[in-house]
Length: 342
Image (tube, rainbow, N blue to C red):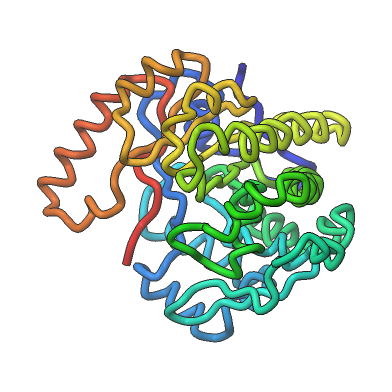
């Protein structure tokens, strides 16, 4: 598909469309570079900006989100920006309390423990209106980018959001969330449908606000085997893509490339490549040449440098990056690494 830029009236013309062309599967002069966690604690200016207020207050400040999004671009010649936000703003908008505990991570004081707890959730149709601050941050950032590079919006996939809402935070096993899948399959599907219904207008709203690409994070795919993934994750991943594309068309918005990143989901590469996304993200556990053999040339592949490789010497990093580029080949590839560690 020919690269199309989603440019609502009033935004500057895009000067560097390399990332968008790669995402659409077009030829590019070089492999475009961006990181999933571009704004992070590795930047002293990030730590300084974040010190002014707690995490979710920062997320609710369009000015702060814009500043944090732009900081990495002032240091590095990146080919895309990804808006600073968090996947857990969606559970918050559904009425759940979420806090970010320093040194521990996200915490839900009252997680979903029983099927009746689903009654506590707000109507998913209201979620997009609750998240206007994200849309404001996207619009402000798009304006201040001045067309330098495209802006990526994102959200967490339904299964990943469900894990946090049921576990009450992070977990090494996801045993409580998986218990729901085994003991309460109908309630699990009900929750996953609620999340899907919330995500679709939220993602469409991000494009309306100025996002030029969208990424769906299925960060906890690896906690599911092929059978559970096919039953409880993949159908909703597909549904999000299908409905967002339809929603963009209905709203009169140009299509944008959509990216699916299912961490440790290498067992489902073929299914993900056919889920309606233009780009499939790979983590560092997948051999690029094997991944390309499995998915063919129907999608662009994204990845897959190990973030910890950046702890190596400059010479070794150069070798690793070159090897990765060689393994992927010249086309249908973008973005060398998942995120940047402190």
